[in-house]
Image 1 (cartoon, rainbow, N blue to C red):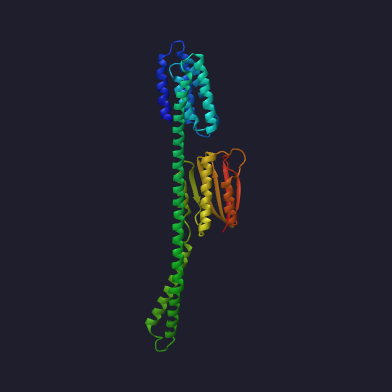
Image 2 (image 1 turned 60 degrees about the vertical axis):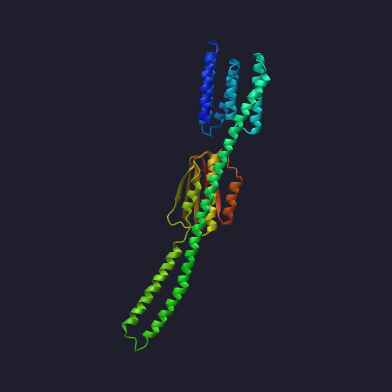
Length: 357
């Protein structure tokens, strides 16, 4: 869109060579100022709301000024089309329609003042091109939003699938551990008892085979117990992979994930809650704080786990809890935990979530 606007302005600049010499300097200066306003609007980050709004207002005034200076060559008409395309990005439909109507009324009055033939027809033609430009930008934005939404949903599904796969593996590992302990352990214990009974028989007590069989059964039972304990200790869901899958489709903020060694989450409900909390913070940092980096750290404490999330954006006034933050509080409360909100060192949002072990 920005590149198309630059080419359009370049084409308009070429058309200025047909102006009378006494009007050309003022028209060229106005067009240059319009181009600067357009570049500021198009290239400035979305956090620069006020400068972009001022640039949009200046562009509207400069387009009408060029219409006053060059009423017959169509320069102002083209610039108004570009203006509508820009305004569609930040104005609501009601404000956009009102501002467009006001600008075209001003253009109509200038045409009447310059005694231009069929001014009303010219304004209708202008409105047609402006509507086309506005609708193109509107549907392009909707397509981008739909693509981003689809990418987030896909990331959500991938993260959930990773948790489900880990949960299924943990359940299978636990089942195998129980089977080893209950079945193999039980039978090996019975075998040891039988070997002990054989060893108590004077006729067999001196046999080396009986002693070796007793030793092997004891070692095998100890090995099975060690394997069962290791399988129980290795349980835990892979939160790191799931969280990174959530952040992958977002161009910003970048995710700085720090999970302390030894932190394990065995309960799928706890893992899902942690995942949803990080997901909501990622969304808020991208939409509202315009943050570049989101830092997520998870570590163990004496009373349980401590999840700390902070971004490097800028809070606009006090934190107002919407549905997302309220949902986080409800999730944490259901697990018996606590949530505290505050400001980070850079002025962004900081969230501390503590969950019982």
